[in-house]
Image 1 (cartoon, rainbow, N blue to C red):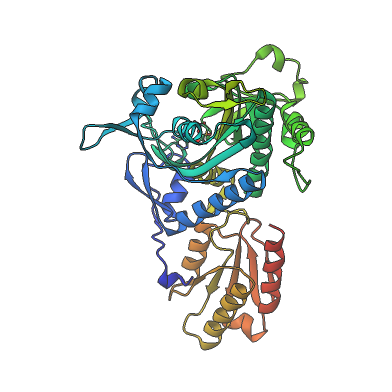
Image 2: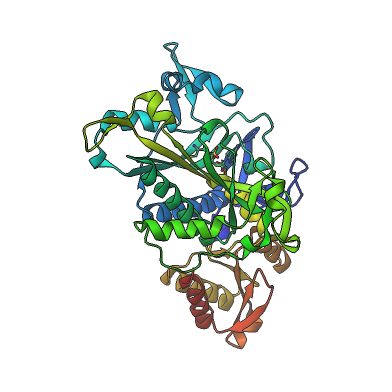
Length: 445
Ligand code: 5CA
């Protein structure tokens, strides 16, 4: 993409309404624009990152055997009356009446809708297990939307629903989600720690939240420092292997890690003092096993091998996809702007032309752009007629992990400069070597 042809409305001034770095930087980098309180338009750069995260979530869910679909944002109130949540949900639910006077709502979550689909289509244990998921906009009329996309009213969420014939199989679905989430966050360059959690309006008694440690996080957390040393890494996971998946969950949930809602000072006291940590965290996902809460209320039964009918065992599993962008920026920024991890960057590299209009510099930039594209890498080429300082400041703000700087002086020696946004270190390379280097870096992502 050439910057002169793109839409990147960066702001020079720091917006006064933004209290935390990620909100400030998303506004300044032209990623989002507020439409009304807690509701945002996703401008091209923000939309690109949102799509990258969505892709990773899809890939990892499908790797775990979960099936993608799409449910609507608007739901009928009747289903929620059946589950009993229409009244319970309170003012967080946005209620709408259609022209026929029917009660509708903008879905805050989808347990009822998916259970309705299940009860109309599946009746035998032979069709189980099944996990269906979608990535769709949700609406919760939060009393205090704040911190930009971090606590929005409209937000983008992956929600998956597991259906199993018995508890054992449902726990495996829960564990599969935990492991697939660990991999998802690691691919995004984030460490998200599973912590024992409260279940709130979703219900059930078995739940973990995934927290990214950050000073600006809304949750208070207590943990054993040992948990931060754990990594899924490159190990091969067979999601059908019940024992392997359970062992990974055991490994990640054995060290103490809880939010203030479930914190237990007596158990925490057993953690060696030098490893006791308290901090703040951003909740980027939550998984629940709630058994038959919804299947019983809505009559979603399974016919078992012996002919008996039992309500399906269910769980629901969410990832806050739009919130993750805020969490990523909280964890990856400096005073100059965002620093995207390679796994989620909106463009793989920036190209800065130091002398726009100089025929050798222009030709070298065009060749670099095409060469990167031929290796599957997308560059943002700053082809504006602007001073170098302004171009560097824009690149630093939007946070592309790699920048290639092209100028007549370097070209006379046959080189361009490759700079890491994270370390600020630069290296002079031939254009071909710079392309090779980037191809190598991204091959490992
Ligand atoms: N049905 C279950 C699991 S699918 C559910 O709704 N879980 S949840 O309430 O925990 O939401 C899932 C994730 O969505 C949260 O972990 C959080 O990352 C994200 N989320 C929740 N509320 C908001 C909000 N107001 N703004 C942005 N993200 C949110």
